[in-house]
Length: 405
Ligand SMILES: Cc1cc2nc3c(=O)[nH]c(=O)nc-3n(C[C@H](O)[C@H](O)[C@H](O)COP(=O)(O)OP(=O)(O)OC[C@H]3O[C@@H](n4cnc5c(N)ncnc54)[C@H](O)[C@@H]3O)c2cc1C
Image (tube, rainbow, N blue to C red; front, side, top):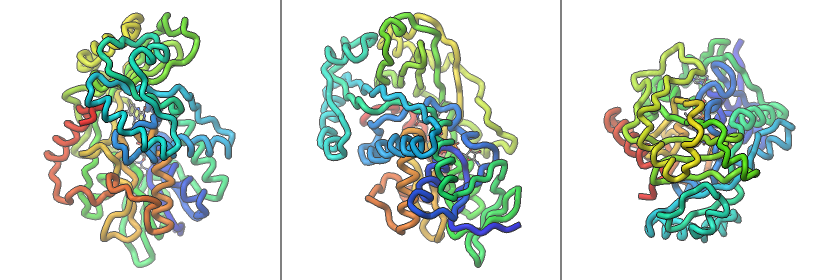
């Protein structure tokens, strides 16, 4: 059976589902999503769900702010909870340079209508009583962001898109993509789909799909750890959920997870995963945790939040995370391949996925982006960028963590 659609999205993580929802919501409902296993099977199911309004690049802030809005809209339309916790976030500064960089963002947030303020170290102690503030010069505070349930957000958007007429095909792997006289021909494990446009939203698997077309995309997977502690008595006593902390000096993010802490660590000297090709039998698996590698960063986390070290580590998750050399996604058209679009390489796909879906949907439908965002344009990388160079750039981007330089 051959199916004809206007747009086929390949990949059912949070990003692919956001693109599908973005298209359907804007009126294109003759669209389908192909997912080789179940929705969220890739990196999405094990993400921490942090959705800050403070992006690594100021230019991407609108994608961050649109994401929570998109998840909440999907929740409203479907009654499927996205599990949003509006805890707010604190981005710590330990130097005057960092503080000045945070202060310079005040006009941008004012223009976007997003609450944003700079707290003194003493003020931050009231917001987060467990934080050591001795070396802080100040803190950027985004009080209205927080974290979502990544699976909840993905399923809510897929359901909302389906309610509008879009279709979702799970257990359907896109095996081959090629340009045909009728449009893009996708040979799947369940038949052929012909689409006017296709969106590759398969994260680190996009690299191999694009190779079929002779495209060398710098998309590789790193191993990324998150650590969850046992119950922390000091947290229980506070009686409210604490804001998420992002500490460039660690570098790490630390938020409350029930009565303990959840910490995402940006280790120095990270390990890559499957850079010669994703194993064909890879399912929704975690990789073997290597806690020892994280000890220097975790020591700094404990210096910042001594209570973090009080009750021991309960769980260590190590999952593959897709990176590009500069840490920004590949979002937009591929020059010279009409109807071929990318939505891959998201390192903070929960934080930006919802917004990115709407942004790309607008671009596909109107043939121009809603606003200029060159930092995500796929054409920014040289097609001849070698694997060695790409991996070296990814390593240094990852190690920088939350650094402003
Ligand atoms: C430990 C950890 C913690 C994280 N925490 C956060 C966080 O707090 N906040 C945040 O913003 N980000 C976080 N991330 C990153 C986040 O998980 C990713 O950015 C996000 O999930 C990417 O979504 P995606 O839709 O691009 O990719 P994926 O979720 O990987 O989805 C891609 C999908 O494509 C499918 N697919 C692949 N090949 C094919 C094919 N040929 N045909 C059909 N389907 C195919 C896969 O099965 C998969 O479901 C974390 C990552 C890790 C590892």
